Image (cartoon, rainbow, N blue to C red; front, side, top):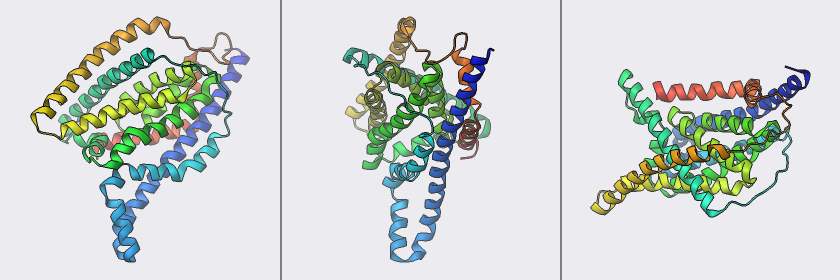
Length: 323
């Protein structure tokens, strides 16, 4: 490894360290707020009328379905972006995407995401068989989707995708593009998957993040990523709604939707096979002879990233083995 490559990788490691600490701060602050709110929900009734009212809000379905997450993002926003600001945010060229290509990306995301979701569920069932536990609790998104209310719909189908895309594609990935698109997409999608904190969501969120990352670097427009993410999550909400019905029409619609999902798995695989040769990623400032894998290794080696990864793996272990 020549001197230029070594210095480039050192800079990548420093950048990964800063971004990792920003994500660690986001995770720790949201977990701490969740713990504090849990204590407040228990102690609130003994703190007078105000405490009782606050406890009722915290215990409500709508707050647990999305309100708590939004509160966590709000509390962590300023300190997290103070850390992120230490890494320059480069300008990027913006391009339009045709409707046909947008729909193809949706099929690739929805179909591939469904496949990885099935894989995650299979892993949960395997672990459940070994441990005698129920697989339902291994993926907390089941509980969120089962509590059908206005906040769940608003958060899962709209606000969640907008916030996540702003953070991971609009801030993390964009700040990493000088280190090459391959490393930027790989790092941001891995962190996006880890942030979800359970094995099923890790698998499909990493895959989805990879495709959305490619959309981001090819178009330079965050709105396409947000719209695709909103569509994917809206499909999950719609399936959740249909699964709660019992009429013949609802059952027919649910069966049709499930069949469509399996067709999308096949279609996404076919599209990826055909389009693989057309994938183009810019090298950024990578020196000649330096590979994207080496840069990614440097990014992942930052202490902030290692701490964030350890916390998320701990959460995965908790949901898989103890929740």
